[in-house]
Amino acid sequence: MCGIVGYIGKKEAYPILIKGLKRLEYRGYDSSGVGIINNDQLFVYKQKGKIENLEKYVKEKPKNGNIGIGHTRWATHGEPNNENAHPHFSESKNLILVHNGIIENYLPIKKELQKKGHVFLSETDTEVLAHLIEDIQDNEKVNLTEAVRLSLNQIIGAYAIVVLSKNDPDKLIVARKSSPLIIGVGKDEFYVASDATPIIEYTKKVIYLNDEEMAVISRTGKIKITTIKNIKKTPYIHKLELSIEEIEKGGFESFMLKEINEQPKSVLDSMRGRFNTKKNLVKLGGIENYEKTLAKVDRIVILGCGTSWHAGLIGKYLFEEFARIKTEVEYASEFRYRNPVLDKKDIAIAISQSGETADTLAAVKLVKENGIKVLGICNVVGSSITRATDGGSYTHAGPEIGVASTKAFTAQVVVLTLMALRIGILKRMVKNSQLKKLLLELEQVPEKISEILKLNDKIKKIAEIYKNSTNAIYLGRGYNFPVALEGALKLKEISYIHAEGYPAAEMKHGPIALIDENMPVIVLALSGLNFEKVINNIQEIKARKAKVILITNNAKIISPKLYDHLIEIPEIDESLSPLISVIPLQLLAYHIARFRDCNVDQPRNLAKSVTVE
Picture 1 (cartoon, helix red, strand yellow):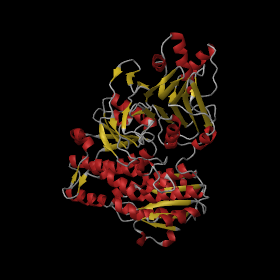
Picture 2 (cartoon, rainbow, N blue to C red; picture 1 turned 90 degrees about the vertical axis):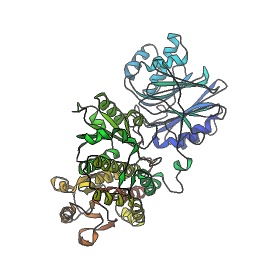
Picture 3 (cartoon, rainbow, N blue to C red; picture 1 turned 135 degrees about the vertical axis):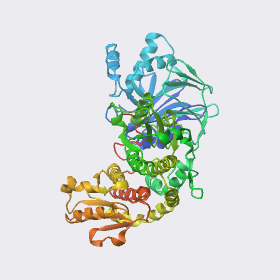
Picture 4 (cartoon, rainbow, N blue to C red; picture 1 turned 90 degrees about the horizontal axis):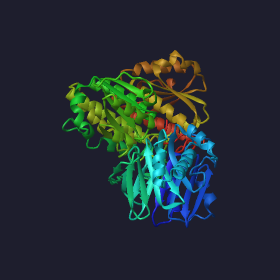
């Protein structure tokens, strides 16, 4: 969750750190801080709140130096305040450390250190690690690198850390386990960050650290990588496929609005080269090596969290319809702590935008320990889940900076659709005529999304009417039940209005008790198997005088008496409808949040990449 940035080289560190923290602010914005060494002096500045608070605080203070670390925090241990902000000092204040993750056994270590006379200034688990490193260095009479290595062998949990010491002013020591950390390689300089966004401006050469690896980065331009068991590793340099333009707002008022509007392109990029309508062909390179297994698989287990879980639910409908495979969709956070019934003939699919979601990554490891092949659907090249899985497909949505996922969701659904069709072909469950029709329609999805985006002003007017609502219900059936869940999640995430998604038929089994004349009910009524039944559900809602916002592609046969607001979307096959029906829900949530003066890119208490439990 938190954001880490570091620099060592010949340039001034502070401007690089601050710019990097701004690019990482979507990962955490409760507090921030920087630490810089210059002429054997260690300067540490920390402030509660956003990066701009830190900038104002540091403005007139000394901050020169060519080596430094920075951090933007999403609070886990301890409330957001100046004391709990990173970097954290060791006992002597000669050493500082920034950390992303959770140290699960910090409390017993802290008690042991307190017995030795250590005094702690914060409530964080991170400060304990800083003290532990120095305590080992002093008592074991080892150098800083060895002290870091020995300390990491004592802790339990997840971490990405960067250590800087006044007594070793020419090196940064970094390490990771279950939390992302990459090293940017420049000419006689190095950059460290939680993801590529702070690095791309300076270099496209990066090293991805693997779990339980640490690196010593020298001012002389050298880097040494070992495991925490002291096994030497050879650095492998990757090339970033990312541009500055992709991580800027590009004239939009927010990243979220930009990313909603990027969906015609992101959907197209996610399907590009993966099917051919003329040849009636579907091909996913990342799963080719597993097609024989997929052709015989009896059960698919989909793992995900949040929006990725909703995409997985749509995947269940797709796999069961087109491939006739029994499919289960699991919250990764629950799955990993159950004793799930698994069979080596199963296939698991892990879905994660960032590829770093801690619960999903842990679930992947659990499945693999049971001898089951795991495919990944991720958006970030080189991420932990992409390296932990056996194969899979990238979504090619491009960087998603807004905390509330939009374009990643539709990209995930595209990949799931193509995967289901491909397996259906392998199992001879999809007729050629059916496949051709679906591929022709899929080809038109980017254009249909563009049509819906033109309804922005109309949706904005509807949003203004309901900006002061305290509750909302979203209803859908079949493929659009998961879309209702996703729409409700978007509203909750960014506007702080309580909202729930339900299968439309389940409304009368409880939720209808909530409905009155003040309750907006957003109904997805798309052409398909359950269309008439959803219309009957709307009749029941209007009988209770609720306000109905209707999203449909079949308005001509629906009486205007059944809705207060109509959002018409293009006709599309029911199995592909989630790709377009979700767009008005994203825009509705966005504009309601803006009318409520909410920060849509950085909603309270949330962070983009959930890298802790």
